[in-house]
Every structure is written in structure tokens, then in C-alpha cells.
Image 1: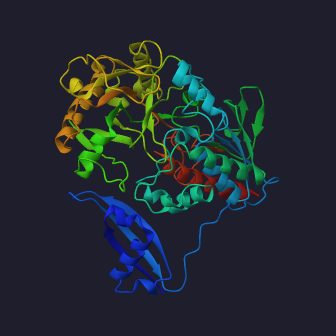
Image 2 (image 1 turned 120 degrees about the vertical axis):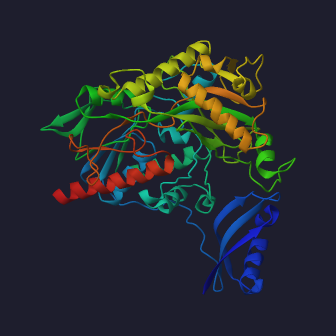
Image 3 (image 1 turned 60 degrees about the vertical axis):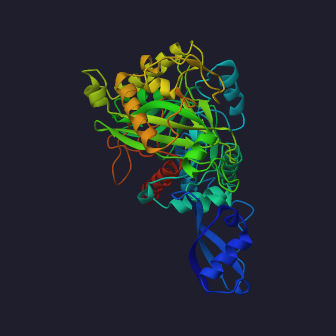
Length: 523
């Protein structure tokens, strides 16, 4: 018989498996020697009091130890000769759609405009060191998508969209640490994700699927109102039973192509702002109420939200012990994001602080209602303005936090993790007024709520503009096909149906199920 119990321990105690087992046994009025096995089911940090605690849910076995996790990923069925499904994009949505297709006896053919995950590193180095952006291989495009080189945070509120636990289990099957199954805010780390993504690709290939890198889609093949394939930049035509469009939130050429071909797309709200970086020690003191963080506690994080005249201002993709990354996808623009290694052991903490933008009310264009690309073009214009303000390189405009709040120039800037470097700029001269003023009010409120947050040791770096897609590709609520282009299945963040790695993966699985239902039903 097994027993499950919730306990709270000091951080040092929670790090010792024997002490955890003994505390759980005591909470169940049992002798520790009577327990044969124990495992942690959930783990979270409770820092509400002056002495932070680790809260654990522990399962005890009086019969035997719990089995260890398998050392190798599970074998997938052979789909070499099965009906094929084209999947455009090899990010979380595309990869999980491919795995879902194999599970249903379909052969996935993944077309990815970028390079395989390890080859991407050379192109990222070119952005960091030489300020050269490859429009097909960068932080957003390439195997694994934006998530591979931007952190691997797996926390999601999309609990109604599918089985989150199954997604986390799949990641562990392919090499992710078992901790992601129990942590309240699971995180893999950019240093570990390339190996996991590679293992997924190798499993898809071993099952008879295909993955074609450096293959950019330039057209959709249509017959009688249905999409049955794609044309690539080298002129090849690839056909299949369905086309899953999982290109991510930055594939502007795909949005433009859809619009040009008369395949309906819609403008949607998105967010824009800055990435703020504090010394990690400042965030640790603020959250853990201590001068020096307990070595058994992880680097602290935070989450913040504020309504400013009916408009949301909120933190996004908070990266403890992280690095700010250059995430432009074309020359002549600057975009920032953040990531952390698995140990989160860098000296800085960064987070996006963004403002909700509604194209219908915030973009000065009478044609917005008739132009679903208006938000995308507005987004692009701000990124290009940011590039010019940074010196027409990947250097990013920046301003100290208090200087920004008090509308004064920063005479100098603190050391920053952003590899291409930062330059002092009055950010209100770069950001759209609606964004700059909402940010100022929101950051003032955050400083009142979080003691120590408002400091000139913190720096704002522009522009954080790719939190989500500015376009939605509509789909039927039941079949998940585009309502006017049958056979086309919009999927993931780029289509407007996800907002992170886990929700994108869930959407990929959901679309694979819908594709399988249609294709296999027809025989």
C-alpha cells in the first residue's frame, strides 16, 4: 500500500532524499525503516515568510522502491510506407505533431527553413559577435524553434488544452531531467535542449519519418480549394494528405504568402515592451527576504502584472540567472529575448516587461480592419527603429530603470549580459508612445509591490516584440482545418493557438489527432 503526504521543509532538508523520506514517514505516523521507497510528486518554493520553505508532495511505498526512469527513449512504430503528412516547421508544435502522427500510423515529413540544432550555433555566434543575421537560421528559426535557444521554460496555464504531464513525460523520455515532472515551474535549460531535440529528430527518422533542413516553403499547392502540398525555395514540390503549418510567431513571409493567395488570416492582439535586467542578487534579496541567498534555494524569479488605464502590463519569460539574447530574424532590426542555462548560474536576472497592443485601437491606420498584416508591419517598423537607434548594428538601445521612470538620460549603463552590447538611448524616443507610457506606469507599480525592484542597477533593453504572433490563422473549432483551405492545419504559436513550449506541443498533438482522424477515416 502507498501513502501520499504533503510536507514543508527547510531548503537544506529538502535537498536530502533521506531527510525527505524520514519527514514524510513521520507525517504519516510511520517509522522511516518501514518505508521501502519514496518519490517526490510535486515541489515548489514558498517564500511568503521570512524563512523560505520547500513544499513537497511525497509518495511512500511500503513494498518496494519505485522503478527508475528508462535510460533510452521508447521505440516508435515504423511508418515508412504510411500516408504522409507535411509539417512546416520543426519547433515544439511541429515536433510534437510529428510524434503524434507517428503514434497514429502516419508518416511525417518535416520541412524546416533553418539548420539542425547544433549547426545553428555558428549562426547565433555571428549575430552575437559580428552582428550578422541569417534570415533562415537564428534564435527563432531552425531545429527546435525559438524554444531551443531561448530557455526551455515548461510552465503553462493551458491546463485545459491537453495532458501537460504527457508532454513533460515525452521530454524526459528523450533526455530531459526527471525534475521537470515535479517542479512547480519546470525548466530544462538552453544547454540541455539541443541534445533532447536531436534525440526527438533521430526517433522520428528511425520510425521512417523525414526531416528536411534548410527547406523554406514559398508556396502552397492547391486543388479545388484544398491544400495538398507545398513548393520550396529550390523549386521542389512536396505533397501529402495534409499540411500542418507550425512555422512560429516570426514567419512573416508565411503570413504574407497566405494573404497574397487569398487564404484568410486575421490581425490579433500581441505585446511589446523591453527586457529588464537586474543583478540576480537583487531579485534574491527581494524574493527571499535575505542578504544572501541560501545555497539550497534556486535563483529567485518573479511574476508581475498591472492594469494601466485598462491595458495589461506584465512580466514575460522571466529568466533567473539568465542572458539577454539577440532574436532578430532579418537584417536591419533589433529584437531581444532571454534564456537561462539549466543551472541558472549567471549573475543577472532578466524578464520581458511588455504592454498589450490591440491593432484595432492602437495602430494609426484606417486600413487595419482590411489589412490583417497591419500589426505585423507596425511591429517590424518598431524593430527597425530600434536597430537605427542602436547604431545600425545589433547593439540594443538601453536605459537605467530609474532614469526611464524619471524621464532623464542615462549618462552610463551597467554591465549587461546582452552579447552584442547596449547603448544609452532615451527609450521613449524608440518605443511607441502607448507602449512607453504604459511601461512607465506599470514599472512604477511593480516597484511599489516589490521592495528593491526599483533601482538604477536595473537596465531596460529594447525591444521585446516577439512575445506572440500578431496574426491568427483561423481554423474550424472541431476539424482544426482552415475553414476555407481544406487540408491546411494551422498549428502552434504562429497560428495564434499557443503561447510557449508546452502549449505549442499540446497544440501539435491536438492537430495530429485531427489529421489522423480525417486521413485514416478516408483510408
